[in-house]
Length: 258
Image 1 (tube, rainbow, N blue to C red):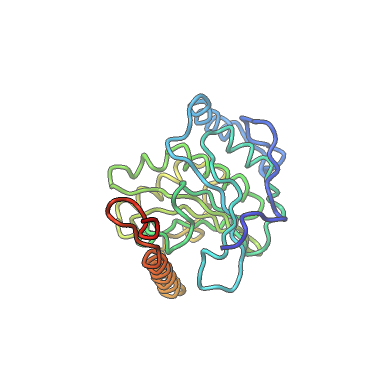
Image 2 (cartoon, rainbow, N blue to C red):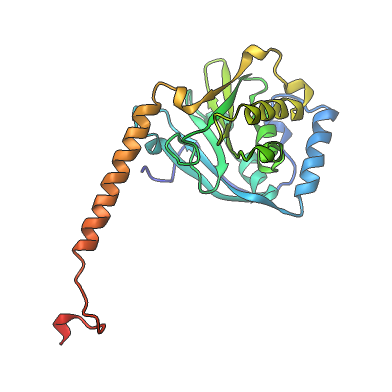
């Protein structure tokens, strides 16, 4: 696992700022968008999130082990104030081509091999660069505020995180869910995302977004095999260490101490 410290880009946090930094937003926020988020933020301001969240940076490197790509940026986003300290101080313009930023529930990594993701998938939106920061910001708020989770709760599904991956002319912005074969939950989640987005950020065409299970990707099998191999090697190493530990007599003293 690489070091959790990255020289560039990195987050420099300042005091809590409970409102989004509009100077970092490529789309001027009309009243509809402001009212939507003031409503959600107003509900969240005095309360912690239901789930705690982790911010990850993923570098595009040649490796079948996706876990090796991840760098921890912030390990505990527990409330809206912490989110804006992270969001407002992040150098979004320095995220390199094909690199990604993820915001995920604490305890779940943004990799296919994670048990929570193994049978899941993503709604992915191709977002023009002029709108990508505003789009990702809104989805992150909807996700962390439990607005998306509430929509699929009845289907026993879980919304696990959001991602933004830089491409040449667009960003691929994704919402990850756990139940990749629950068609009803997938449909509800997609409809909820579009309904809750501000009007000016909604996709202009259905051709610009899609749902795809993780196991439909070409690299899925290789990633899962690598994860199983790593787990077996780790278990074998643990068992070897345990077997080599000096035994103690039932009375609680070492044999050598008698």
